[in-house]
Length: 116
Image (tube, rainbow, N blue to C red; front, top):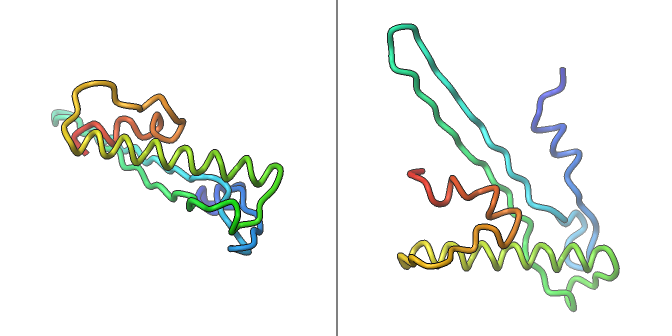
């Protein structure tokens, strides 16, 4: 049976742009959940998220068009939402926190807002 991470890495979208021959066209989130239980002992659980973010890019410099352009827009939008969310969390904001504004922040909600 193949190892999980290499299989996931092969499935990750990459494409050439004017700035990067192997540009990541998606973020990667790997969540590891561990549960330990021993009869007569308190059960313990832990969760760790490993995240590889696709880099933001300027369309004029990367020379992207069509599908690659749309991917770049989505990448930049999710990174902007993540930045706004981290800024709101670090400033102690109590109003609306934009977890649902992108799939990335929704996936990372527990890690960003919990006791991680």
